[in-house]
Length: 244
Image (cartoon, rainbow, N blue to C red; front, side, top):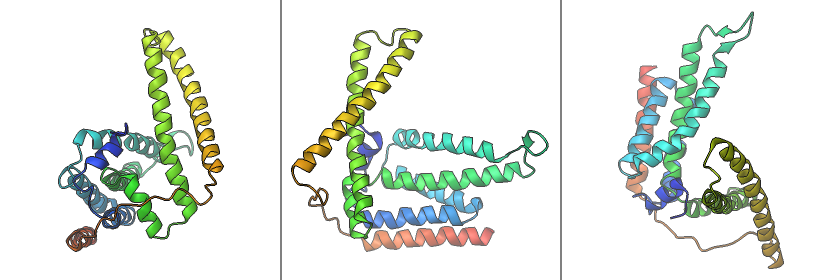
């Protein structure tokens, strides 16, 4: 258990031992379909396929997938609200408010579902080597790797300090909760910055200049999975164009 629900779901997923390249092809294809095809029925089909695959064949817990999608949903809802409001001649609704909001929400949620399908079925330990093999710039992969590692430093600091505050009745009242939350934020940022600095100094002291190299697990590609992915994407495109 890593402490991150999405990461834990990826390690426990039924698709854990599938090739990351196969899953990248499927999920990137779904994202492209969500962005390019009309919201109806393209985005609806993309979102439905992503959710069905995650909860069905990949066996991702529904509660984990739901918690992961609620934050993008909140951001999308706020963004949709700002796009349908007009200030010309006074505050009011845009003439095509419903269509504009529906299109934005459809595209965004479908793309988010496709990205979460990849996140909940592919651990970063598999995804980063796959990106290297796909010739993604080494600097980009290294930044992603370091950021991923620092997430756990941040999470560990957050849990340790919050447990100490709770033991001292730091959240026994509303006033104490506000004060403890402010202290928690400041302490976590300070401790995380210090841990990151020490990590950097330790790696530099060992002469590490080209990134941390590890031996990745080689997962074989499945022709059947690739064929089914291509057929599913083609079906989404065909159905969307037929309706449009």
